[in-house]
Image (cartoon, helix red, strand yellow):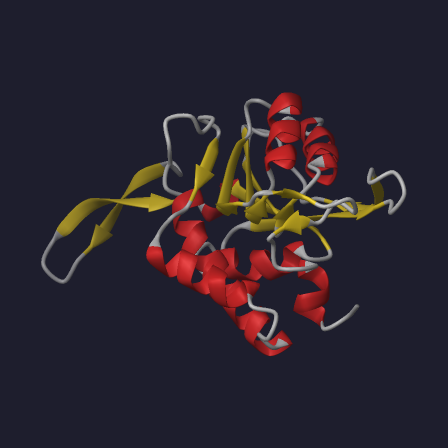
Length: 214
């Protein structure tokens, strides 16, 4: 990450992450292959987004002796999937933190205004003072992400992070302006948006490629 990159933006440049992202970008990758790669890639990215997760010492018995060893409390972590495409990343993150609670926000982008429209919101109880990781494959205009984070902050979580596959400069700027305290984790910062709000060079519509729809 270059010195000019804003401190809240974290581009995960691990070779395995970049390799799998390249395969996902390829238009000839099948629906099944895309879905499998997304699960693998999001699991790899989850290692980075959870790097500073707090731990506590617990007493355990090894085959040799008693010791104090660090453990995370997965129940204090809430994963929030922005429907519909966020589910693809959600499954991968749950591979390594299966104890996390899960919430969902349904948003769709109005094709004319490109603004986010909410149609569903379901969160676990007692979100206050918990750590949230919001997942959505694409940070394009940033409008959906901003709407989701604004709604979630009303629940007063301890912290919020945003995890995506691809980000566009416009989406990063929009999210950072609205929520400067939220750290963004992505596999790539792409060049720009087209006139329809799609990321270039991108990988197409993530939801369509996950579910085989158009």
